[in-house]
Length: 74
Image 1 (cartoon, helix red, strand yellow):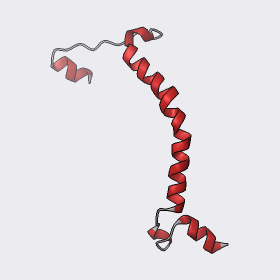
Image 2: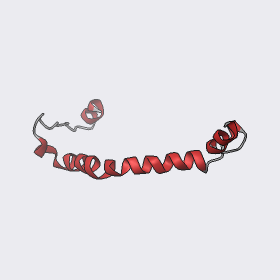
Image 3: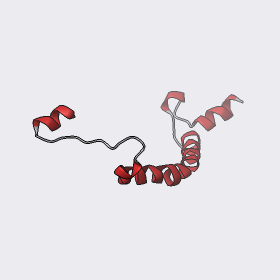
Image 4: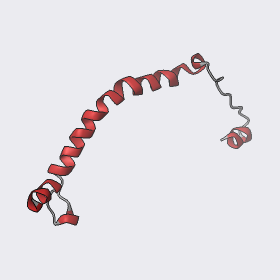
């Protein structure tokens, strides 16, 4: 990236370590991810896992769901 910028006559500048105000947009995005998006992740993962095991047919185990395979095994 540095070479490409130099070829086009641009200079890259970096924010100083420990100076989050120099890059406020990224800091705001990171805060949003930490406090809003990750808050919903456990519920989303639980719903996905339930759908994967209960609704999705798996060709590798005979075209049935993993939940049906577990029932047949017991």
